[in-house]
Image 1 (tube, rainbow, N blue to C red):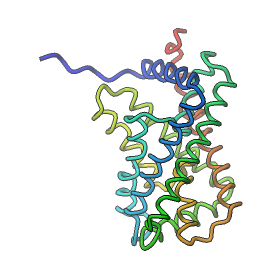
Image 2 (cartoon, one colour):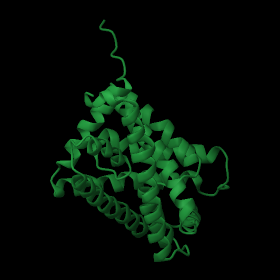
Image 3 (tube, rainbow, N blue to C red):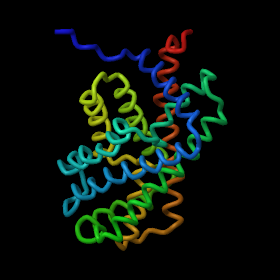
Amino acid sequence: MPEPLEAYRPAEIGALIETAGVAKAALPAGRMLVLAVLAGCFIGFGAAGWCVAMAGVDPGFGPARVLGGVVFALGLILVVVGGAELFTGNALMVMAAVDRRITVGALLRNWGIVWLGNLIGAVGLALAFGMAGLAEGPMGAAAVRAAEAKAGLGPVEAVLRGALCNALVCLAIWLSFAARSVTDRVLAVLWPVTAFVALGLEHSVANMFLLPLGWIAGGEVSLAGVAGNLFWVSLGNVIGGAGGVALAYRYAYPAMAGK
C-alpha cells in the first residue's frame, strides 16, 4: 500500500495561500460576487444552527456554547470544501499583496465585492428564514439575544472581539491548506471555529445574518447599531486576519516567496 501523504508544512502552506490569493484577485467581478453571496448563505446556515443549539438555554458559558460552535463550523466547512468567497478568510490575501503578486487595488477590490456579496447572501437568508416562519419561538429568541448584545457592543470591544475571532478563522483556513483530504480539511476547520464561537467572539459575516434575523424576530436593534457593529467588527476581522495571521506568517516564513 502507498504511504499516506504528509500534511503540507507551514512554508508550503504560505505558498499555496499566496497562489490562491492571486487566483481570487483575478476573478471577474460577477463570479466573485456570486461566490461571495454563496459564502454569506453558508455562514448564515451555520449561524442558524448556532441559534438552534442556543435556543432555550442560558447564554453564559457552558456545554451549549461548545455545541453551538461545532454546529456553526458548518458554515466555514461549506466555504472551504464547497468553494466560496468569504471576506474574513480573504484577509489572508494580504500575503500576496505584500509580495507584490497582486496590487493593493486588486486586494481592496476583492474585499469590497466579497463583503458586499456576503452581506447580500446573509441578509437574504435571514429574510428567507423570517418569511418561512423560522424566526419565531426559541430560535427567534436566541437570535434576538444575540442581535441585541452585538448591536450594544462599544467600538473597542467590537474591534478586539473581531480581531481575536478572525485570527482563529484564518488559522482554520491556514490549517485547511495543510490537509491532503476532505476529512482532514473538515477537522482542521472544526476546532478553531468551535473555539471562537464558544468564546463569544465577533465574526462580521455571521453578524450579517444574526443582526437582521434578530430584528425580524422582534429584537430592539437599530440600523445605527447594525451598521456600527458591522463596521467595527469588519475592521477587527481585517486586523486579526491580515495582521495577526497573514503578516505574522509571512515574516516568519520568508522562504515561501522564494526569498
